[in-house]
Image (cartoon, rainbow, N blue to C red; front, side, top):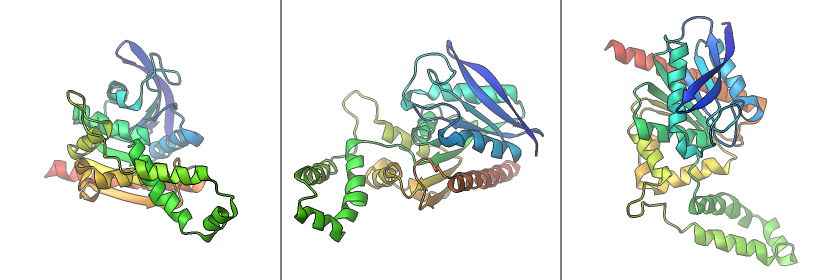
Length: 292
């Protein structure tokens, strides 16, 4: 299917945001808003977001990838990922304004873009969003990073004879051992909790956003990525995340050899195909429910 691309501008409060809208040849009933993590702009690593949007548009799905405030060609002051809910809402309104046939959207995000999508759901309960595509969600804390390193890096090293040979020969110094000890201490830290009068930590707001979301969720995790490993470790420990990874509306794929940004052509293509097939299945489910 043919598609076209055009640059668009839209307002987010007093600021003007810039995006690129990929429009399929025929009318699109569903759209995807790519939530860009930072500090990054709408092209993505290795032009990943450009290529993804073109693949989806060629299959009949409209896609908007845009720069949040203060990034790329958008105006305003830059924001952290946990402060872009207004930007996401403005982008959803923009895709529907330019394409009135789009009645629902999926939020697609990598790393803290995925986290921002969940935080948007927590803050807004936006009924226009009926799908989430989450890739290696960011839940970083000092303790979660330490747990991931101890379990997936140091444990593997300690089981290798080469490590002990270097240790006994003096090639592994006291600094390396101190680093292992320090991380073992950090990993015993509790998951973040709300201090008196303070907002919930962003990791728990992410979980609540997912828990209150009634659409489909696609979760893609990289096997060679500590951010993904941190996410899985965190989800095991925080009660807010209990049962979320076993919900019936979740489709999960673990890409064993993938790095954080799915940087090879093979991995990028696999992500595109998994996303497209899931979007088509999710759309069919919602159409079926609408007819019941």
